[in-house]
Length: 282
Ligand SMILES: [Zn+2]
Image 1: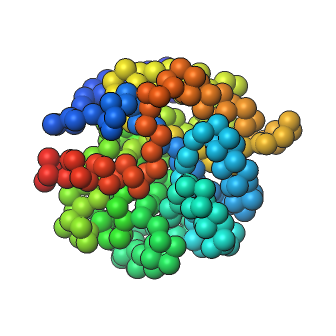
Image 2: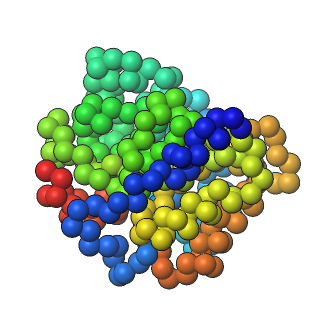
């Protein structure tokens, strides 16, 4: 908790990160904010809960995107990817092996980037998030993606902890990239693991307060919730939190901000951003 006190000037809200992009045109249909729900599937335990989580979101009227690790302890089935797509959900790629080595050197990264690009093609995915939010936005340009999710506005609790300081997406101009760049979307709500496992919060209040502030500033609320840490029954094992906490978060949005938010899939937001802001940042 000492660290929390020390961080209060930069977390959960970083002053200045609400500054709007140049030539701001707002969100489609005059919506007050964009809402992007993402999930990283860490292990087999999380993989087995993917469809359950999809159903919960669907029932409450939301859509989201799941990021899968191609080479870890579960096999990514094409049928599961198909089910997500049929339900108008999305999926992306979460690293290659999740062994902490992806960004060790340029050589390792470029070698693995070739394999990641094969999975991108094979799965017909367009998005990426690096394990442990490690990032090098220049190297990431080697990936054939339209967006990357490996950064955050502000988060002193991450291993590579410098944030990008904005609650909006931004265009990353990148000479390596097939399209000359890609859209970067930082998460702007603290990760579930940090809040509900490490800090042991019992409510989503930190999410709700930050969300209200993002709405006031017309920003992008982007969250990363892991099926691995969710308990769908009344028993919560260690490193788990009850699904009710996440449901409370979603219900708060649909009640308080009904019709005022744009619950968008990352690939759609990337298209929107590229169309409207690519030129501004080149
Ligand atoms: Zn991960």
